[in-house]
Image (tube, rainbow, N blue to C red; front, side, top):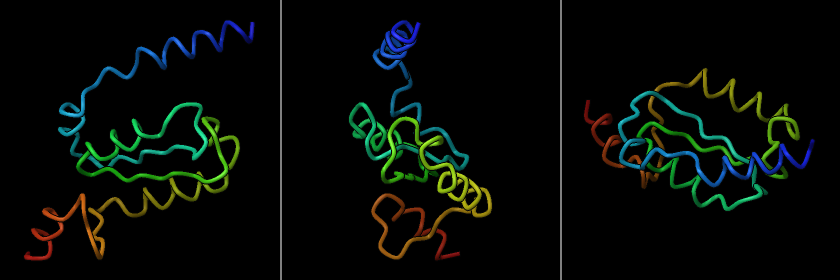
Length: 108
C-alpha cells in the first residue's frame, strides 16, 4: 500500500502544478510559500514560484523535508501566525524583488 501512495505522489510531482509563472504573477493577495530545506526535489522550482508571486513570502524551514509541518510544527505554526499578523506589504531595507513596489509605498 505504501508503495502505491509513493508512486502516486511521484506521478503528481511530475505532472503538477500546471500554473505558469505568468499566471502566478496575477495573484495579488499575500501568499506564504512554505518549504523544507531538504525536500525530495530541488527547491529551485519553489523559489521560482515564490519570486513570481508579487506579494509572496518565502519560508524555508531548516532541518525539514517535504513533511515540514510534521517535522517542525512549532516553527511552522510561528511562521503562519506571523504571516497572518503581518499581511501588509513587506518593506525591506535592501529590496531586490520588491524594489519597485517598496519605492512607490515610501513615496506615499
